[in-house]
Image 1 (spheres, rainbow, N blue to C red):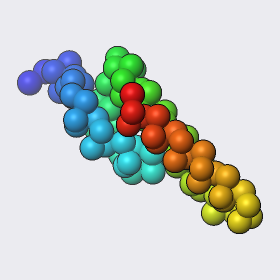
Image 2: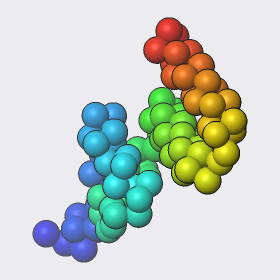
Image 3: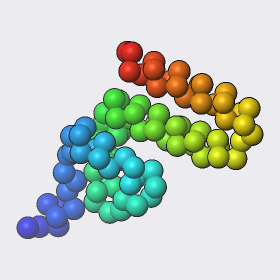
Length: 89
């Protein structure tokens, strides 16, 4: 196997990309697996939008831990509305 074949990135499908999202967002995924995922996200609008949503959701959940009870109730309503829109689409 020559150098170009050894460093070639293998394409992954949407199911495999989804399995890697959590590790990617937590910065646990490294090397070739990370490059494959990033390439897939760059080429797949669906997965790009999905990981963008998951990152936003993770940030909101993290912020909610620091919020007051009134802010938590409002954030919960907003997240429930966002989730219902996704599943009703």
